[in-house]
Image 1 (cartoon, protein in one colour):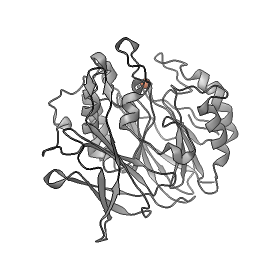
Image 2 (cartoon, rainbow, N blue to C red; image 1 turned 180 degrees about the horizontal axis):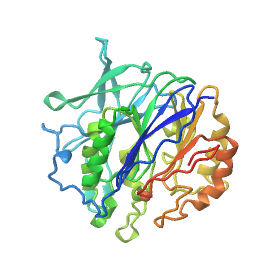
Image 3 (tube, rainbow, N blue to C red; image 1 turned 180 degrees about the vertical axis):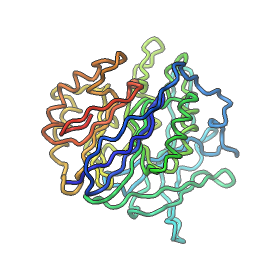
Image 4 (cartoon, helix red, strand yellow; image 1 turned 90 degrees about the horizontal axis):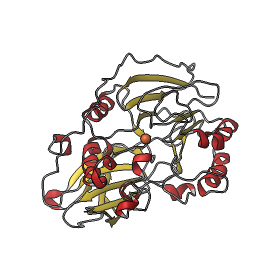
Length: 371
Ligand SMILES: [Fe+2]
């Protein structure tokens, strides 16, 4: 059995920790950070902040971000927004040491939310990538095209070291910027970010001003264009406001953040699984039905027996609302899902469950699982 060495770094209004998988280490719970957060709430960064800057050039791609594009890790979904017209759906990509430029064709979509109309949102799945390889990619046309890069994970296997970062409840305040910078500068060098829900907090604005989804996309691009962010939906993604006839749950989120849910037999982008290096990661939705015979329940019931611990010894679950929380805020909100799913987590020996929602850090340690 592979054991873990935990490196916990610091906790801000939103927390960011990284952890390292390594072999043949004794499990060590680590140390609590000495960080004490400011008692004042951090304000959203103003619209003219440099982190929200629109890239130069006509119709230049913005809000570029990537996520895993299949179940095994040799595909990537590249997403971006063009503001003026649809432009090209193509992604050009090539391995670092290759002359051969490949291209993949994606889709473009738009959506309306009350009095807001989105830009042209592109999603393109780049497939058949080699494992453990650096790729460059380009989106956009001519002078407005933009180039980024990513590194694919190593092939799935039990003894494959890999470093994940964790961020939840990020938002776009000045503290959000510190959190992302903290992650970027962390010497552990996270290779993939597990995002635990609550992305932009656009719903804090009148009529859920979706322009704040755009600023958030531009804010995170500096990291999310270069390494996959694995998405989990939170309560700030629900965006249902019957008074303005917005009745479709998760509308902005599901248009903007695509995930490879069909690859794990899921019928919804809100719950799905991926394998990456030595991990099997299951993403659940705290704000979708999970009672007996619901699609999420049935999917998870079929999913857990599929995990081959010889191949992926680490079984990780992501969700937004925690099963255990001793704070006043959001106390016991995860209780009904805990009643439904915790017995399975114990039976299938889930290693660790990561949740967000409560803007403070705590963990509980037991033999199985770690919450
Ligand atoms: Fe939340």
